[in-house]
Length: 205
Length: 205
DNA sequence: TTCTTATGTTAACTTCGTTAACATTAAAGC
DNA sequence: GCTTTAATGTTAACGAAGTTAACATAAGAA
Image 1 (cartoon, rainbow over the protein chains, first blue to last red):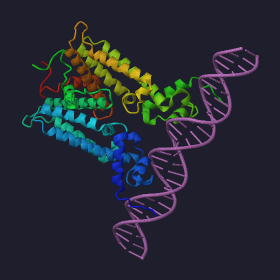
Image 2: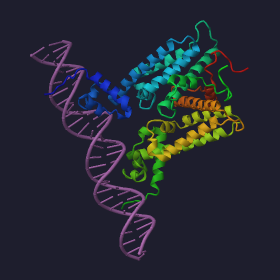
Image 3: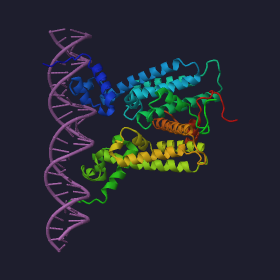
Image 4: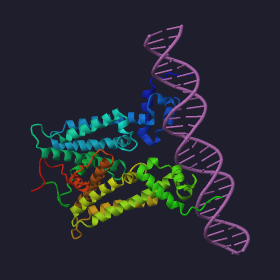
């Protein structure tokens, strides 16, 4: 009477894990519950994944890939370097807001250790390479001096950390984006704010 | 033969919880283990705290208080508005780097819900008030128009999110501060970076 | 067909958070 | 001083979790 051979249990488990993560976060994702929801025995997931971390790693890899795709596509259209940085920042925050649990997973402590999951490390490296390439790639014709390269790198770090900070604080509810403005323009405003200018300066000429 | 009356168990538990949190993070902090380390029965902590969240809340409150203190003291010395913002950002990141687990606790999902622990909410509000006051307080003599106030608020958000992003990425190991430079000047550089300027511009006159 | 491997299952072990029931100490009321 | 009561400890149990071992069945290679 054993049904056995459920089809491809692995993919069903993964999809179910995605669902749970999306509406409850990694905290609500228990292996036993996952198995129950999938209609499979409690030990079955161990045949397809390296324990809980294995499942989280698989989900995180998929998340990193979507993240990288969205960043890459955001970096395509803008005509110049500056607008590319801004578009990237906006896309970064948008991903976080639309997929808060995934964003937390790929950046938080519940993410399985990168050195134990090479594919996860690759996925992470790739996402950050996309970021860094897009931010540091000035117009090809301009040969950069060493100092300029260093400056470009710093700019990449600055852009990244700003977007990351906004993303974190927004999904944690500490910053509430104004309702009368769309998210992207709010983010663009924060990214462009120049702290070295006097407080009452206006940007318009 | 019951020993009983262990002294003030509450404080010992709290201190022990601090220790565990500091070197292992909230993941390693189990109530039973905490009780064992303290040399007390496994149910004893429940007489002093409202379960695990209660202990985490108590630790988080203390962390918020230290955090607020350090921010406040950093905001005291700088002579003008702009330098105050920078000093605050540096202090913010410094706290995160020196107390990564505490920083994660007060901002992460393992933090007990604010609406269940009023004292925790107060501690959090206080810390952010310190931040916001310091960032939005321009020179007292200048009366601000509404637009200027809005601009100051935006500037506060920008400064906060930048510092937060740097802090997060650094303690997560995604950004590695250069070894040949002290942390504070590295942070100051990132905070002041102006993304709206051409990439090869120099800041010095 | 037979041997091997992949995939399931059940049952157990340990740890955890939490609560109930009971024991002891300390403090308050008389 | 004695008694009552609240605070503080204890042990024992419950359910849920991650994980593993031992066993069962299916599918494919030999």
